[in-house]
Amino acid sequence: MATRRIAAGSVIAAVCAVSLAGCATAPRQEAAPAPRKPKPAQAPKSVVRLIGDGSTAYTGAQPHLPRPERLRPGQKPPQFVVFSWDGAGEDSQKLFSHFRKVAKENRATMTYFLSGVYMLPEDKRDLYRPPQHSPGRSDIGFNDRRGIAATVRQLRLAWLEGNEIGTHFNGHFCGSGGGVGEWSVKEWKDEITQAKQFVKTWKTNAGMRNAPPLPFDYDKELIGARTPCLEGRRNFIRAAGDLGFRYDTSGVNDQVWPGRKRGLWDLSMQLVPFPGHSYEQLSMDYNFMVNQSGTDTQGNPAKHDFWGDQMRDGLLRGFHRAYNGNRAPLIIGNHFESWNGGTYMRAVEEVIEAVCTKEEVRCVSFRQLADWLDAQDPRTVARLRTLKVGEAPRQGWASFLAGRPAPAPRGAPGTSGAPATPGAKG
Image (cartoon, rainbow, N blue to C red; front, side, top):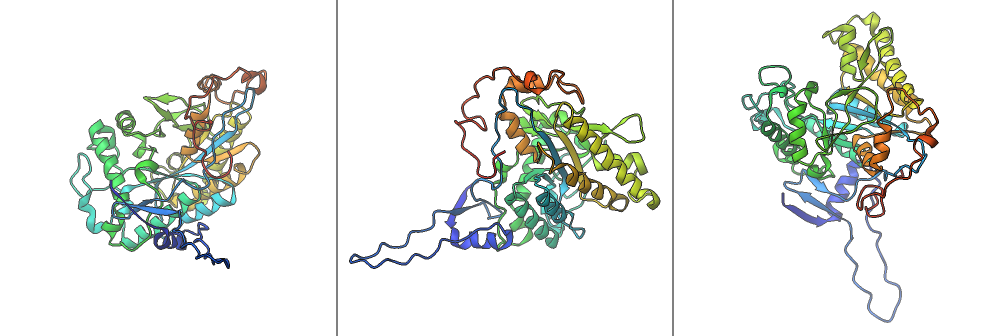
């Protein structure tokens, strides 16, 4: 899509006013006394390139994105933890803004999977043409202009803080009768295109042409997703690979190191201990709820605290199993919902506070995890994948990963042939 280039003084000032990103305009220069005429003031080098109708913009490299580093021979891998949010949006509960604050306080970044219809007002619903459904149909509804403005603000601030904006697609159709599990590759591509388009045209659709843009090019920002209800993965992966995605997190796996499927990193949801039960539980708030109160989202209030503790303790057991074992990344999925009195939101917050500031732990987005995996010697990743759930190397990490690494391919993240990403060193 065509872009428009404009001077920084107009748009950057508007973006900074709402983003609290620490931007500043160039200081005024006064000519020093000299016999010759002073040179004219130079235009600022920084610019914002508006994209399309100005709903999004290119503003440079993402701030606070750590540069991935290749493991040295014998070096123990860090413990990665990914907290992610399905259908991310800001409503009256203000959970998006709350967890942004929690993340900053605990040195964490996260992935927010935005539902495209949250950028589309109800009166424009017919713009959405879901596969196998009539125009304007959505199982999660649409938004209003106040909700769109609030969500855009959180997306803007989240990205400027180093978080990732992924997609949870649009209408959230599950099950039979046109659910995502029945969609073809072509239908998935159409759904992805529409999800992108609603983000790239929110100002026009919501009638907010004077609002500041989202500070990223969504065509480049969007590199991964989680499908609704973890359905339709087979054809989605085919579509995503053709469209340049780098990872998928729509599967179910044990706590082991990830590999690739059809060229995408398989960063699946994981099975973690379920305290009080002999079976394991998917590392997502919704699944804990279903195994506690069924489909009743506001079950017995007397059990709310217990259920929240059960989820918290299950995730922590999964964390310690990996941290003291194979160091496989821990993948956790959530929703901005107050199910069972908000007990799962409390549980997730307590897990963030317990693990993200620990030594050798990195709470990161899926983008950052994929960057790190790309930067590694493929033989190192293959070696890590031989470790089973909770299995630490018998002879220690120094011996287990002591092999001489292969040279990194030119241009791989974290190598001398790739551009450094500004921000803290990973």
